[in-house]
Amino acid sequence: MLEASSSSVELPAIPGKRYFTIGEVSELCGVKPHVLRYWEQEFPQLKPVKRRGNRRYYQRHDVLMIRQIRSLLYEQGFTIGGARQQLSGEGVKEDQGQTLQIVKELRGELEQILRILKG
Image 1 (tube, helix red, strand yellow):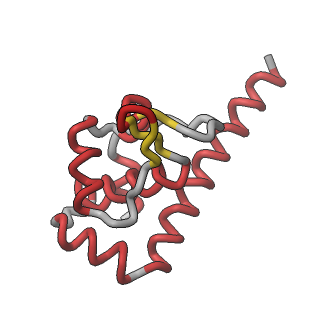
Image 2: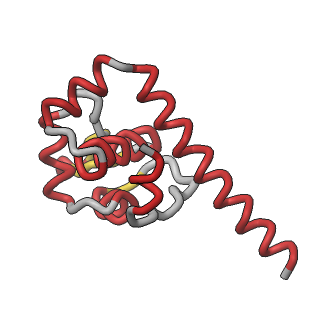
């Protein structure tokens, strides 16, 4: 399972912001905006905040959820229904996936800090 994600394209670290636009999330997760809008209909866990003019604003947990959905669909080969079942039926795996993602991001951020301190 880890081998599949390590051979795939590395996603950028999630910046320390509170809200992200659909364009930013698209870049952070490697998924086009229309796919994100579709996934909102298919996955009840995905609920971005909607403000002025129905604009979507995603929070960090939404971005992590989207990355997990992306992994289930694109890397692990689940169907939409299978991914939905995986997310709703197995909260432990969901937590592990999110924890792993957070650890990867923290490591990347710490490596950046170390490079800054050395340079």
